[in-house]
Image (cartoon, rainbow, N blue to C red; front, top):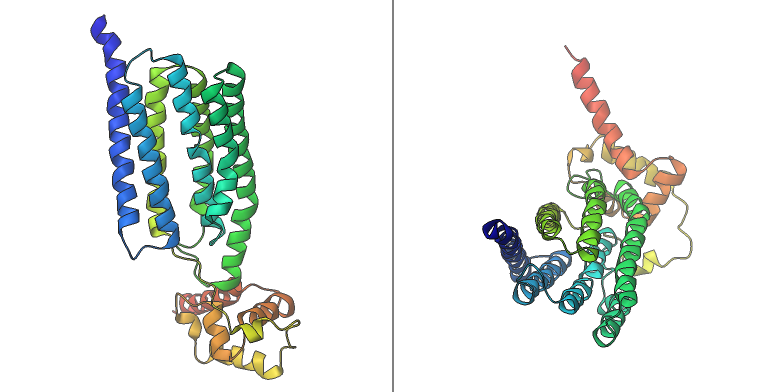
Length: 308
């Protein structure tokens, strides 16, 4: 009986060791590579922070029935990791979003509740922290339902190939994230070693999927003309030669054969501005850059399929 009582504790410790090593290795990888982008460095920092939280749990909570105050204090410290996930998601959907001052504004409420619980460890403060973390997480998910479609619309207006650029994978991850959030809330409110083990396994799987997709994710770079043109109050009307040159590039030069063609490259060839070209496609032709380019590609494929 004593062996079976000890085994769940050992499994929890083993799962903590595995997730700690996994997060530490991935965090060092993303931080240490100098060629990585801003998003990768942010991901590495978040991973290292999460690994420290797991190390803290291994050092302070190593028995089946830990001290109640210490257990809850550790959970309040762990809640500080909730906004770090939001930083990553917002930077992913809106490149350039992350700033230290903005990040501090998101962390301050949780830091305040943590300090309050440290000096006044009541059930009310603890449950307030849990509910605040859940409400914040649901708010982040709600924001993503607006930012992801906006991000994908930007892609269709500027790129002819959205492979490794779109965030369709994030939609699927959100469903798993909601389930993961439920497991975390249960393990925080109810001392349960099996729940802790499930949480560790689920968090490891979640981070592996996130790291894999962000590693494949291409940067969203929207090149444009010099600022003097971009700052004009109103775009100049599209001249007939603008449209004629655009058709020549696609009909004769067949620039749509470039799989990575962007609206910035086409605008540069036209001697124009990305904003002007996008306005012409959207309002004059009633299409997006993605649809305009791929319409040529689809017609070319259809002609080949129709040729015996």
